[in-house]
Length: 80
Length: 139
Image 1 (spheres, rainbow over the protein chains, first blue to last red):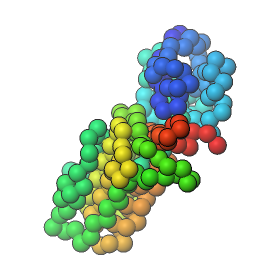
Image 2: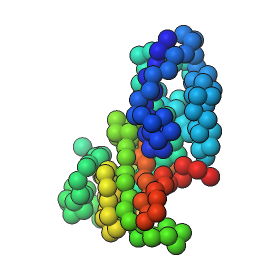
Image 3: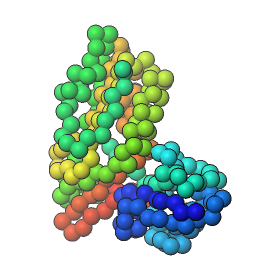
Image 4: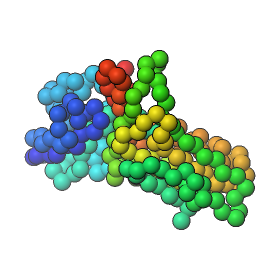
């Protein structure tokens, strides 16, 4: 299934876009998505850390993702 | 309504923030004002650029505010964050907390900015004469 991934901060630089489309298996989890993204964008691995947000909530590794989800890559935050 | 959370793309109005949290039962207001500093690790900063994942940032800030109301006897809490390009001395964030007594106001205000800096999806980029860096992105 196709999922859209929103990029912010340095991830926008890494993806060269603010949204990318990725093809994942229908039973993909956040962990699987991360592995796939890191293969295609190895610079993600150089970040101190990053989180994945699904529908505006921080997601856990084994969380399933759906084609209708709003998925975002959250690099280390630095607000305030 | 005792929570005011906003993300704005224009200068924050500190006095309005104070006026909003003020109330007759309030004995003390603690205000945190974040400001753009002119240097980082000895290097001159030209400007900061702030970006937000707005929908999620508003939700996360609201969670912090609700948490504060649970933990301390606070009457009102306001969190305003600005996005866009900010120059030295400008204000990216204002947090204002009103309580009957000062102890709760101090503690809640500190907790709010400390937690915001850990969990809210907002990012700042430091712009130097010779380049730019997303803060905290790399070890």
